Amino acid sequence: MKSFSLYILLFFTAMVYSSTAACETIAGGKSETIAVTKASAYEAVMSRIALKEHIKTLTDSLSQGRGAGTPGGLHAREYIVDRYKEYGVEPLGVGGYLQNFKEKGLNCSNIVGMVSSTVRSDRYVVIGSHYDHLGIIKGIVYPGADDNASGVAVLLELAKAFARYKQDGNVLPVNLVFVAFDAHEQSMAGSRNFFSSTRIKPYTVDFMVNIDQIGSVLAPVHRGVNNYLLVLGQDKFQDWIWEKVELSNRLHGIDLDIDYSFYGSTQFYKLFYRLSEQVSFTERAVPSVLFTSGVTNLTNKPSDTEANINYEALRKRLSLIFYFIYNQIL
Image (cartoon, rainbow, N blue to C red):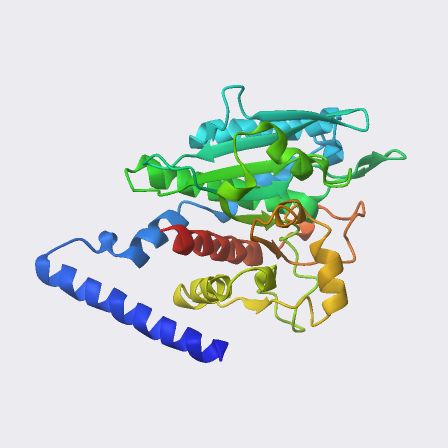
């Protein structure tokens, strides 16, 4: 039934876009005003080169595995703040980008930026990804390239694209909040502290997108298919979320092999879903979805290095998440 509904949705969407294009051609209008073309223009703001630069920096020797409350974590934090400033992402509060908190004696900080709505709105969409990792254990650095420098790289590119969208004078009906969470390795303390010191209330958040471990091709849904993605949380949404993912994947020609079931295992689905930041939002009745490429044999090991990131697959996953958000809010 879902497949038939999606077919109908795609058919009528294509008809609308085709009609719009035809009318604008007759009227002499520019094709950039067509919705799909406009979305594609801002999708193109994001790049594979930038993804690689983010991940290389977040896994370099100065980052030291990005342990919460460590000099390496501070190095990563400064890099993320600098990118927010460069891209024109605003601080959420008057105190700047950092949401400071203590966890088990560690000085931790979420990094919170916002692309505010163009008209006054009390509605929010939160896009998040944790930036901390294991740090140094017994003298060995755990770089955490896939877990989760890859997720932060996607977060930064999304922030850049939507900031550019607003800067170009386009209408943004909701506030987009971009959060790099700290202290994931301390029972996800960053996401659990998020609502405690921001003006945002759970009931004002339309939905939350979490990005965690998204740069690998080592745990494919179907053997030999690198362009895959796991999407968890659809069962907690209405069907329109599934429809938006599928629409974004097919209409824009991304063609990822998408799995909504965590390899068909209900038990591991429920377990894995509770191991990342979106659970702090679902517990507060915020519809939340996790995008991931899954746990691999490199997860939480010193061998999780930048060299093992598949940038072709990562770029496609970034595109799908961008279109998913874009198609939902605009």
